[in-house]
Length: 347
Image (cartoon, rainbow, N blue to C red; front, side):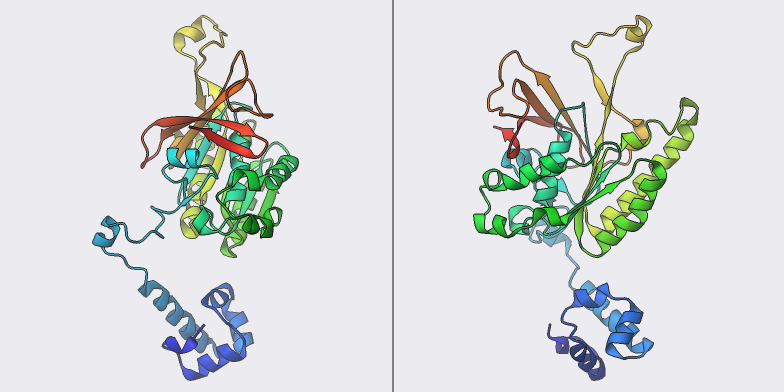
């Protein structure tokens, strides 16, 4: 870094070079006290340094309405997406998962929710030119243990799934070292996780994706029917905290959600338990729905014979990924399979 290009006191520039500080990122990652100790400068000099660096960074971030309209700056969060590692799935979502906001992935058991999220944990580590964010992922488990064996399978098969990435790049990547697993079986532990450990990992640039598997499990046994108001307050609080982290660090939040059967009043009166053509709706109600940027739903339908393109995972069934709502997408869907190497859309 050429510190002479900044409008800094020569004494400050000399101190930066002597302390072997080579980038703006290093400065911003250190506290004021640490900078004072390393550079042996006064508190006023350090504050002046930080202010100058901040003004310089902000100066280059302004865009005109014409630039946005002509789509010339592709680094803005409304254009940059996190790829799902499959061109068919990325086409459905117009590029992938938005970087800012909470995305929900809801569906019945064995529909493929965890498989998609594990694949995202690997995709986020790829270079920007291949749809990644060059960073790690935080995977918060709230009920089951983390599927480490399945993750290792996906890592071993990345050269088959990601044929668009040169093999030498995949070989150099240490996928398992950049996935941070947290266990949070209750609301208090989850609160501690997102306010302390999660924010620390994001602030240090060690992660750019957060997966919560699943959000509904935290509320399943904590609240009774008479505590709906308290439950809604907790949902609003967690939603606001997750939104704040996503916006501050431009990090997508992927929340897996469970589903419940949608039963009409007439069916309830008849005590109908039929499963043919059953309808499901995501858990947690309208309060949680209002926290979401995008809702995706996955479903799995068993077939009499083997489904086309299905492999060892889920043969004899067809899976569907649907866009329920999103501000930038129409309601749409595509079919996909879960194979040994990962999740693949069917054209």
